[in-house]
Amino acid sequence: MKIEIPTPLRTYSENQSTVTVEAKTVAEAVSALTRQYPAFQKHLYTPDGKLRSFVNLYLNDEDVRYLPEREATAVKGSDTLSIIPSIAGGD
Amino acid sequence: MATTTEPITLPQLSNDEVARYSRHLILPEVGMEGQQKLKAAKVLCVGTGGLGAPLAFYLAAAGVGTLGLVDFDVVDSSNLQRQIIHSTKDVGRPKIDSAADKLEALNPFMKIVKHDTMLTSANALEIISQYDIVADGTDNFPTRYLVNDACVLTGKPNAYGSIFRFEGQASVFATKEGPCYRCLYPEPPPPGLVPSCAEGGVLGILPGLVGIIQATEVIKFILGKGDPLVGRLLLVNALDMRFRELKLRKNPDCPVCGKNPTVTKLIDYEQFCGIKPEPKTPSAVVNGIPQMPVKELKRRRDAGENVLVLDVREPFEQQIAQIGGKLIPLGELPQRTGELNPEQEIVIHCKSGGRSQKAAEFLAKNGFTKLHNLAGGITAWSNEIDPSVRKY
Image (cartoon, rainbow over all chains, first blue to last red; front, side):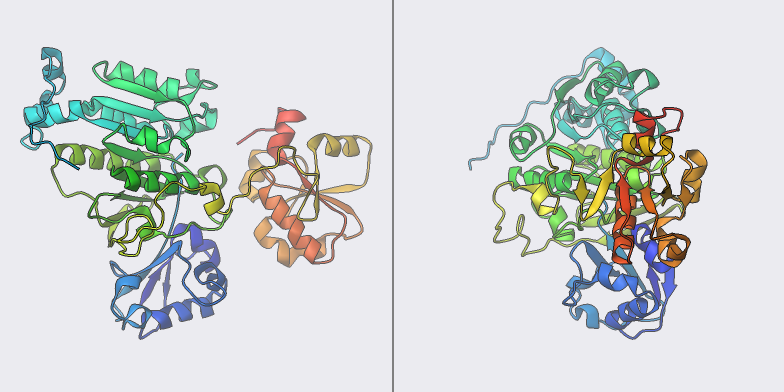
């Protein structure tokens, strides 16, 4: 499946805008990403393993927080996981 | 609270206004009544910069009756790459005056209210309560959380837009049934993680694209037409020219707009965002790294002292302007420390002092002791020592 990397985080994915991983669940997909690009770990997760609250994970167009199984939700090869960070520019 | 059952009397349009708004009047979705609603409406634009410029212009063109502007900043030439409401002659003027002049020239039928102040917890509720809807065009996290909370507390919707480099987000927050900004992002990122437009750069057209989306949402709200971006996050990528939409849900446990709110008054947003107040006098040492004023570097160079100037900017920045430093971009520093002599005094600089501070702290952890951060970077050098060094 594809993981879309937003611009503010592309410095950690060697400037790739999309990363392809093999995974059966959302959690596995994110683990595959942090294994391939370890810098994501500290930018996506707190030291005690919780997703940072200024980052949102979306499976296709649904916020993972609101899916019944959250990160344990099963994923298909045609799914896209998006990382949506907060941005504040306006000037 | 008692609700009025009397019909609201909408303001009449003069013959000149009818002629001006003809293209709206003949649209079924607007018509005479819609145009009267626009004239009756009061919209607050927070910020008259990248987002605020197109936003305010199009709201004025559309015939919004009262437009409040909040901005305390002054026009800088670097704004003119995208803040199209300001012109070259306005450099140095308060943005609010520059913006008001152009808006009045475009549409003399509207009333402009200037709030020449920073929006703060002390004034936000009082200012926002005078308007029907807010359009947030600010450029920092503390103000975005302030605007969000104030909108929820006063019951005013917030037409939100934000940008970064070539990507943007837009939505409408703080409606009664819909989510607020905190439902999407309960907490801000740590300070320094997400660069501002000044640090990260921004494609000039981008705030134009996103600001117009915000203006569209404001107009739709006033008219009560169309499908608003409530509960929807629109993502724009200008380089790919792709638009995506994500679902936003109202968080029932949201501390501001949830069922049991814990935030019932405005807080200290700088503290919330982890921003420490700036000391009144600049520190000579920050995180163990001595800060060297540019005048001191000039003195040492003129005296022929053996000091290495290390430039940690990107190659394209060195092409714009340089002060003879050895270039090792910050991202390459870990692999290239072997090129530096720990016995030599090293003065590190970047554009304005942020990246060079990070570089100095990194080198200090790796055995270097004779380090200085050039306070204010090459920008300060240009301002105080050599104006022929280009600023960017």
